[in-house]
Picture 1: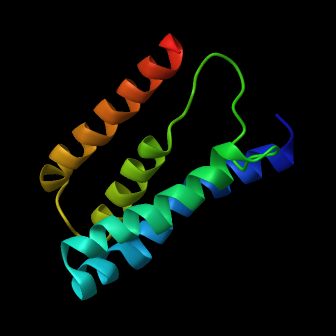
Picture 2: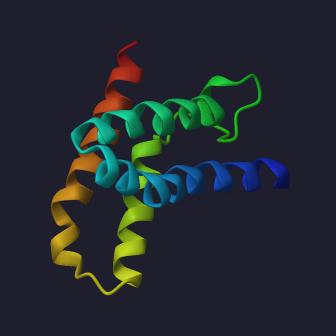
Amino acid sequence: MSASQVLTTILGGFLLPFIILLLWGRLVDRFGAWGGWLAAVIIIGPIWYLNHGMNHPLIVQQGPVFIDMGFATGLGVLTYGLCKGISFKSHRANLLAALLGGCLAGIILFIL
């Protein structure tokens, strides 16, 4: 991996949790449950395209291991919460969901 590929992969992994923490809660506060659906469409889709869908995506995949955006999101939100003083115990369910989702995505990609 070149230095620029390392930097774009780090940027791609940082981008989704940053935008989620910046916008998702505001959309839910303003529009309720519809805000959550709106956030899913306007945040996840475009960032997935930047990270995986372009000819030269931000996240560079090499080798047999595929890193899912859910893993980066889970770690990013976990780190944010720990820095804000939220206990690790309260993050366990979300972290487990992110890990299971990432594993499921990897299994599906392997099968396909």
